[in-house]
Image (cartoon, rainbow, N blue to C red; front, side, top):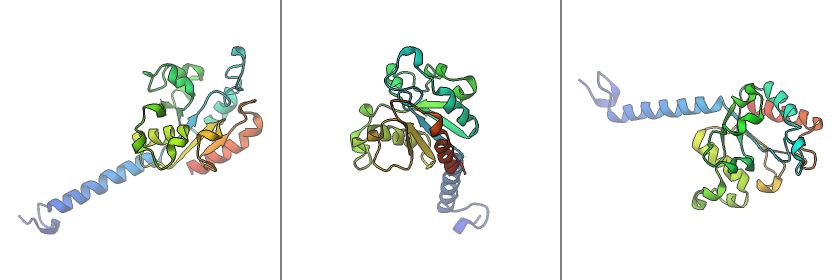
Length: 191
C-alpha cells in the first residue's frame, strides 16, 4: 500500500485532512448561503412606539405579507420583548403574535448583549448593542452567511450607515410607504 501523496489505497494524512477540511467548509458555506436572516424588532416596527395595548401589532400584516413573497427568509427576533422570558431561546412564546406560516419561520432570538463577552466583540461593536446581538447570533448559527437584514426603529443601536439595517419611524411603525424599500432590500439579499 502506498501512503505518499494520496496515490494508492491509503491517502496521506495530509490529503485526508485537506479533503475533510474542504468538505466541511464547502458544506457549511453551501448551507449558510441558502439562508437569509431578518432580525425583527417589535416596538416601532410592528406597531408605533409608544402605543396603546389595543394598537399593538397593527403593522404586523404589512410585514407578514412581504415575508410571504420571500419564503427563503428566516426570522430571528431581536425585539426587547425576548428579554421577558430569557429561557425562550427559540422564540416559541413570541411566535403567537404571528400567523402560523410566518411563526414557523422564526428560528430564534438574539442573545442579550449584556450576557456577551465584551472581549469577543468586534472593534467598537459594544457601542452598538443591537447590531452586536445580531452578529453574535449569526456567528453562533450561520457563521458563513453574509445575508442578513435588521428591521428596526432605533438606528443608534447599529453602526452608522449600516447597509444591513432598514430603519422605520418609531412614531408610526412600518407603514405602506416602507413596503417597496423592504422588498428591494430582501430581493438584493436573496439573489
